[in-house]
Image 1 (cartoon, one colour):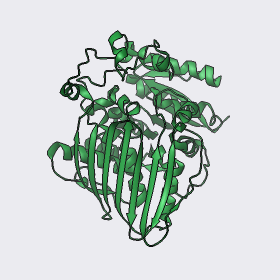
Image 2 (image 1 turned 90 degrees about the horizontal axis):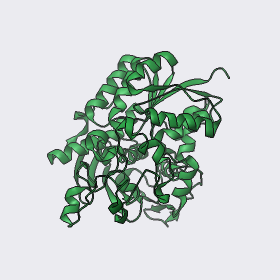
Image 3 (image 1 turned 90 degrees about the vertical axis):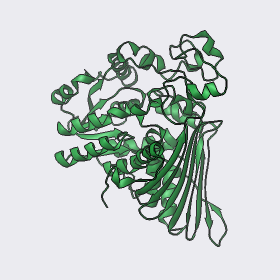
Length: 442
């Protein structure tokens, strides 16, 4: 069918499955996948097999990471989707724009101020567009929170209290992967919490002004383990018999039925020979350079203040957020089910997350009776957010979105700005003025 928009994907780990399936599946009448780019030919071969087995489609052309320019020149994508390692986002965003493409990037947009400012400069120079995929904005409970605040039921927002906890399945997984190294991910306050900071920016309609933060590595990593008298004589879980007794045991070679799914073997273990990436490192290894316990204070441009905390080693997973205004308070509670692992289908992720999920949204008027707000039920991963954002990304005329959930490069930078300012504050022990790092308009 003519008139389909041309897309290329750079980075073929587990996160790109969502986009790959969407283009070759539900949105094949509107989109063409004209190329894949990755440092691992093994991973791209897995996607080629997926094209045939799941979608009965011809595999897209594949290009080595060093041949990204060649991909763009030969295949002429109109849009490049960036799902590579966080610390490389800026390179592909900037280069794609210089070669005449618009860009869709996974969050976070990048990992530090220097790279964020370079992206802004590229947008000014090229006039190209960047969209950051904050799929949490599209989850029904989160969208409902936005509606409640927009209706003014709590009045003018004054204070936010936000607590997010990761369990020892999902949370631990960040410490097995490249995310455990701050120079690759920016730490959890950038990689993970950029979702949360974006929600607050969007809910209250403001950008951060001043940030103060404290954070430590208290549970994961070699030093914390040694302080508890624990010793783990293996760098990774796969292939070590003694690791089977470790509660964080996580082999990826297909030797354990519990971890046989999610294409971990094909995407990561088999790809080690050309990627060099070890997906199952011991969470108590000395490679860990990020924090697992964080507390952040933020003052926004509209003088709303926020207390935020993130802990990555809890028995359950989910979040609680309360926004108090001059006419009342709204409280959101969302306890997740299991959330893992890269390579799962949207259906598998949704089923895993639905197990044990509990949600509530409750309004407390200042001088009235508290009441619960009904939360729409939507199927799909990330609380139903993924399926909705895919419509917005790939339909030529997507459904109207009165909540304005589409996130620009400015939104991407504003969410990132809390995390990188927090990193600077933890380094110096001082509050950080955000505009000193990345000046935002408005």
